[in-house]
Image (cartoon, rainbow, N blue to C red; front, side, top):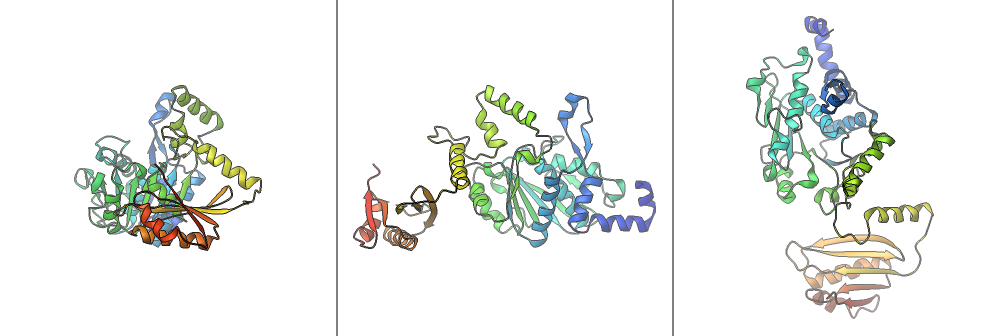
Length: 383
């Protein structure tokens, strides 16, 4: 079939048009033309080079990527480990590289060896090169020579000038402009603020892929994005009940149950030491609250934590009875302005009281609000 397509100009043109057009062509390209590597098959006496056969959630992911790409929008991908998200991102990059003239796709991670290391299929560029090597010969670009066009952190398509580039650490996003940029394991970037600044000018389509981690910009984005993509543990066909139990038991025997919770169950709080209330208890309480149809009763009250200027942010929270209903933060305000801001939010929410941190910089906020009559404002000495 490959030789027939290559010899017949009409068939070759039809194949290029079919695979290069739209989300359907992308999904067909990944299923028909992409091969993956699974080293764990060696233990079972099975081939380690296998054709890509997408399961439903991976196909959803490819279509979602295509939608982000064509609409030039950015979004995070919250994944369970071992879901094939990075392989699918690599396949998508090769699709752009092959069918989009002049297109540029970027990849970044916290370390260079995770982006590109010669002969390492665990690196992102190792995956990309493996996919290109196994493409049907009629789909390889005219003039393609891996010794010339496949270099460290850069792969060029000599036929259409499309490129795939790699960057790492604080330099992610500094290498020009891209049509799409993937940040792998985004929750583990050491200085994400530097990456944020660089990527803002680099691309209109940024895709961050990671398992979650509390206290990170990635988690904030996942919490606020209306179009984020989620790879759940049980959406992966090989993660059967038996597999899940065996993996969980294996890690718990090593006293590493939190690793399973964080990497496979996407519990961003699992790795925090000294937790007073484990995240799974919080999730269970919230789930029960809604399943039982409970309604909040009692007083509406607010809390205000006043920041000390600079890059710190002041925080406000409001609860109705047992249910926390609103959390906000603001930066750049002086203490007195923060007091007015928090008081205004509490008033709009219908609160009868608000507590504020009254020591240090909080005293400035207190001076503005402690005599308010519409809401009972009480100072709290945190020391």
